[in-house]
Image 1 (cartoon, rainbow, N blue to C red):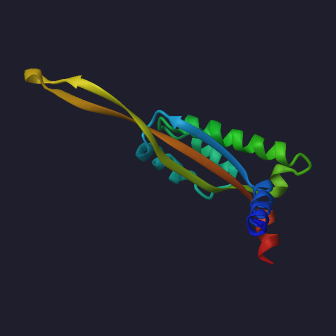
Image 2 (cartoon, helix red, strand yellow; image 1 turned 90 degrees about the vertical axis):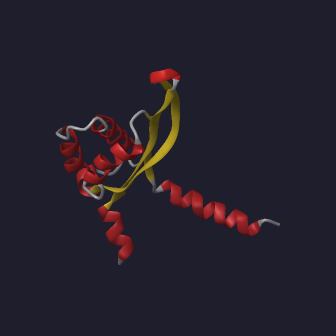
Image 3 (cartoon, rainbow, N blue to C red; image 1 turned 60 degrees about the horizontal axis):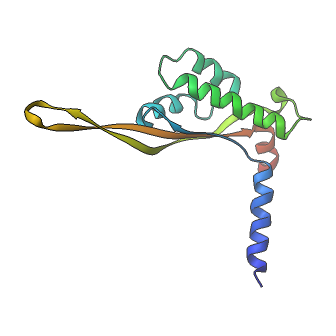
Length: 138
């Protein structure tokens, strides 16, 4: 019993072996502001993306740059025999989701209070290899 689930679990495990992901959770900048930076580098090769992030003057840029370096290191740990330039690493997917928010109270005139919502975000970067994509397309 459960053979179909077992087979599907094996397929998912095999797919996960070739997937390189890095995540930053509970980033203290709102998802809307962070998406502006993520949209700049979506689909770029990693060297060009690092250069763009270095000179982007947004608050999220250094965090995404650090996350991208982490994703590159994850790729190097997973595939030590491959060379980064030959593999043609690029940002296959970058996703910015909303996280929870901290709710604070700001005093207002006449005994009232205004709610302040300090928003957070989750950032996920997945890297792909152009060489690998070309081989599977053929």
